[in-house]
Length: 192
Image 1 (cartoon, rainbow, N blue to C red):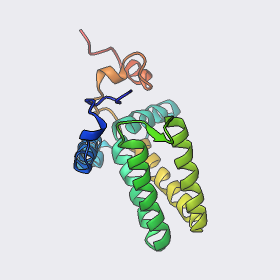
Image 2: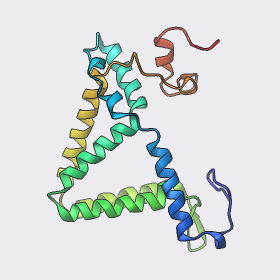
Image 3: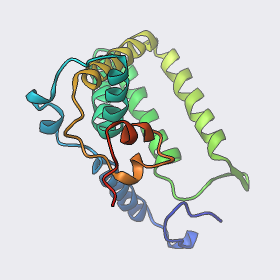
């Protein structure tokens, strides 16, 4: 049985408090990747990109470096848009908890009727459930517009925020990283 990177325990030893403490630890580790808001909004770090290539590199670098900040911004914009639709807000919170407990925070695979359910099936089922529930609240257009606004805000920041002062992990920028071209484009490697 896969334990997904945790210390295996027998099913009888797990309690709700253990689950909550694991959820807190994972939440803290996810939020630990958040960068300081002051660093993100540093006034002297904004300029126009010189060309399309630099724009692309800025978007890729900033999307990697400020990923958690960007996710917080988009979710906050969606949350604000749902304040005028209380039913949609309740559905949003319920589906968020379903995603947390059934997909992001679980340590063991999902079992239904003695069968192991794959992560892909859980992902598809949660996506469809979220979509159907949001369609039933009739706030789908509101949510889509707020997501679009969030993405535009993030893209504007990513385009205009210089990345000269950002220090990415060398492991992530190395070969095989999804933004490996950034390390190559920014000059010689710092490795000795």
